[in-house]
Amino acid sequence: MKLFKNNKIMFLIILAILLVAPFMITNQYILHIIITILLYSILSMSLNFVSGNAGQISVGHAAFYGIGAYTTSILMSNAHLSFITAMLLGGVLAGICGIFLGIPSLRVKGNYLCIITLGFGEIVKLILLNWDKVTGGPMGISSIPNPEFLNIFKDKNLGFYYLILFLFVIFFVILYKLTYSNYGLLMLAVRENEIAATSLGVNITSIKFFAFIISSFIAGIAGGFYATYVSFISPESFMFKESITILAMVIIGGKGNIVGSIIGAIVLAIIPEFLREFNDYRMLFYGLGLVLMIVFRPDGIYGLKYRKKFTYKS
Figure 1 (cartoon, rainbow, N blue to C red):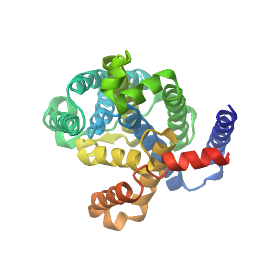
Figure 2: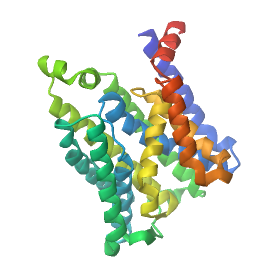
Figure 3: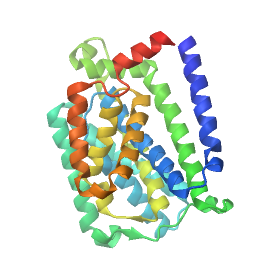
């Protein structure tokens, strides 16, 4: 109970700092980095929910991210829907696709499921590249409208900052509550031993489907934000390397842990800024980092052993 109270106080302190941060930061570039960190945190938390907690490894998470981005862009640009409506529909469509991806997880797992999610990501990529009339093909979609309610801000970047902060807080609270609830315990049971979980009466089908739906929905919402924030999207932004980047955040931070996902997002949002001169070798650095983490710290930066130590001290 004391630990929960301490975590709650820490969360409120960090939230208060984030709320006033834009007024202490005059450099727009730094504000952009923080927005990127919050966006990546949402993506890594969503992937961690299905992969870290439920044990369903996915290397096609960027596909849901792209589905949300393209759906939001098309509905805002062509159907002239409001940002909130378009973004929610993008999340719903991504969630529906998550259901279809969840079906194979009932029969396969591990490396085989990993290959299926990889194939799903490639299918989405081919659709985005070849459905020119709708997606714009390789040229993508440009001049994506900004959310209409951001007009109240003199500085659009400030508006985008508070929008992504709002989404981050909402999804953090939802995923935290789910992870540390009875449902979260059922997910862990499925991750550790499906046969034992089934024998104890756990409905594995509903657990896996729900995990995929929630994870893909949140990724779709993140994609909707990204599309309006950058005002231009193309298939290049949602390919395999983006899925690997998101997966790297989860592994580096620590699987099965929300805080670890955020730490991983911070690391992989900041490191590229120091490696801009070596951008062509970015994936090489990511791969090397993953190998080193798996060998020397398989639990991640904020892994189980560190959490136990932290809990004991607190």
